[in-house]
Length: 274
Picture 1 (tube, rainbow, N blue to C red):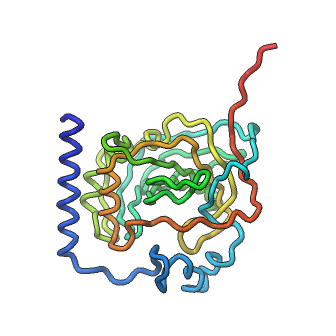
Picture 2 (tube, rainbow, N blue to C red; picture 1 turned 135 degrees about the horizontal axis):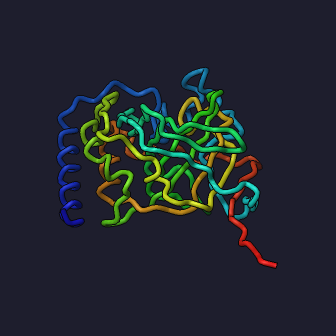
């Protein structure tokens, strides 16, 4: 099928899903909201539950602006060491976002000598992190845990394109449609999911210590945000926004204070022959 034909088909499917949403009864109220100025909005997350207080008083919260003037060039970090592989996976509608849960061993990433296994990936629209004050149209979070359940998250930014699709999302589109607007609904992905498709061959990245971007906003998370901005089609972006539960179409937490944290930028040094 040609790209324009696929684009038209996906837009039609997305429109159909959106119309079906109008006939679905509103789910019971969520524990938190992304809508600023509401009782459960981002500025109030820390007051909603005692266990969420870090969302308000934490000093190392995410997301942040990755500003040029705040960066430290850190060639010693080294290139990212991935060992991803295709694994059994399910697409899950969590209400606030759409998640790919890896049910098999999808490999992981080695950071400072510690292995972090890839457990899940999910999307935020628009992006949560900003580069020099600019937020992009979408961000993929690849969430990893080590043996002590400490977290390392890889963030990938996306800019919307009329026709240029994201290959990682491409395989998952039909499954996203099947779980759309049904919180808790999940579908097994035939043939599994290969995380390598999402990251491609990335070299330059930002690194800092932060937190999860949803309650309870737990700190101590190692963040790696890839510098290269990928492309996602407008149809794919529309599909993701339509699939979450109403009110979560813009599911990006506001930027948090850097609070003098170190933000490292890895750039490989050229080899110089002497």
